[in-house]
Length: 88
Image (cartoon, rainbow, N blue to C red; front, side, top):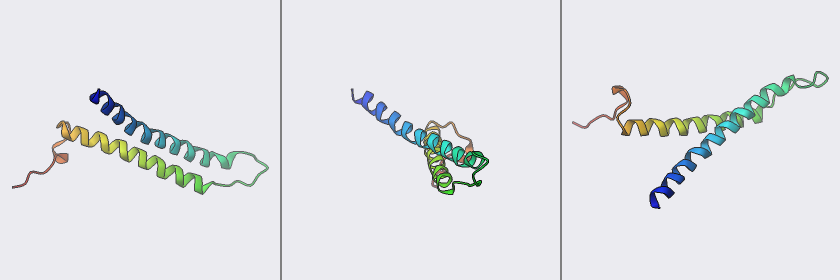
């Protein structure tokens, strides 16, 4: 039971940054394409929405990428330059 609960918690820890990265990408896309919306309106760029999306996207990708990197480092799947340095 404990193993199942810990696996569920690990999956949730990966799903939340994935959802944040997805929302960030969609927010950046919406902010970019909002300027092409209506020809009678002024073209405008939603900088606040774009920057929020950029932060969410970068944080989500950074978290998931770091998780995969450290998992692969633990299992010795990385190139020699990324392996932990041994103390002399």
